[in-house]
Length: 612
Image 1 (cartoon, rainbow, N blue to C red):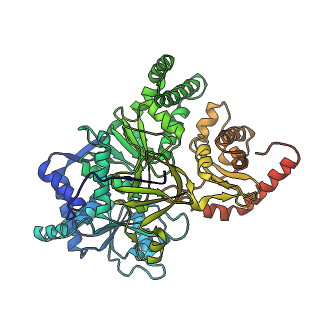
Image 2 (cartoon, rainbow, N blue to C red; image 1 turned 135 degrees about the horizontal axis):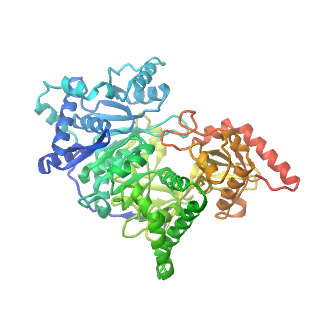
Image 3 (cartoon, rainbow, N blue to C red; image 1 turned 180 degrees about the vertical axis):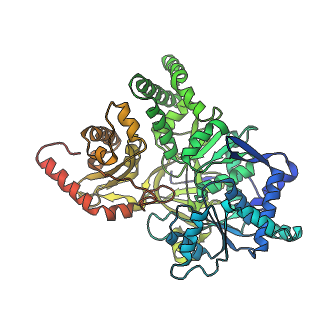
């Protein structure tokens, strides 16, 4: 199968825009709760009437500040309700919000604000304001940027006061003047290589894709009690899509600033569906195992996890789980699995995972727990998802078939191509990059994959990341990296070996998980630097490598690895804000380290000892 199309099921008036749906909720369902915000220990609810009134007064403030139709409004903040209100207000005023990661440097902020020509900016706090101020001092400055308002300094109230005299009909004309074809946002790619490019996404991209997703995933998004907690960065396309998706579905959405806080907030917010990236599911799994404290409790957890995975796999067989497995699953559920559900709030039945491969092990584990993870796939340029598994037919290990209105094709060299309602209209101010991104109307994703007869897509790697060894073997690093990163001690893994005699890997340790892991194994505390050289730690890392190696051919197996005494982070420049490794930067900066460990591995092999 090299091409698959899922037909459209929902038709939309071309005159509609994102905030038309907020207006609809306020008129038809005024008491419908749309947002919840944690104040102290309590979740405060905001209905459609309050939300529309708040959005309109902020939008009037933008109009009064001179923001015209199509003008760019930068938003730089962590995930919080105020960001969503600013998004909606900008759209209501006919403007175009441009997201900026709150962790961005002055240089990064300067590029985004200057390239998109932002006329005003809303930032979270004084630290972000200082970043924008520093960006103004860089070469070229930010000549069109006029005002910078701080959320923590009362930005939304300031705008509401500023817009008090703007007539209702002027604002209504702004909103009515926006349709599906109009630009909704410019989202700059994470930039794992080169300077970030601004993907132009329209109201149609968001509205049509969201409505098709709501229809296709009805059992997830349409129940009366459906609700979700948003904690991934709103500067990321996946979070922006979720923001619009849940609004159009008319379901409550909570905001929390990061993954750590989200894990604590699940219990009180009690989401019914969770949308996240795979690293969160790895953290939850590893965190639960670590909290068992070692000994018998850890053994029980691992047994229960194995039963959950076996149970899930059996669900995909014609005969289903055996009688003995059903008994084991009931015991595992009582001892362990039910506690994991309670930690997620006790109501979560579905999750949608995207942004990176989830891995079959975690997919089966969570389904065995009782949380069905629908893995999906997409990019910034495709408004997040092109594909997602369906509740009625899940194939764990795939990212599902295309969403309605989307076509996916596998090119002759294995690259995934996409076209349809999610695909962006082009890169801002970059016609050359836009032309290079398309092949006869099909968007080149840069990812490699295959499809089965049902259109279910399997991702096999990144086209630009394929490693060619000295022996001419093509190796996709992602499957090996994903497998090793599943170990609780591992934070990041970068597989290397281009033009080398064999495949190797750079590994970093998870400083947060290290103390608990050592304690559970009866070991004394170690620093990350000490652990990187510790024989016991290396022995367990070798086990993780060995497990990963069982999934590939001998020529693709990792023969040697090196543990770094540091981690890759956004702050030190080795991760993008969406937590993807900047592979080119790692390979450049650690060339000497890679040369050394290949030389050491060769010497060790020559001496007849196993390499590690």
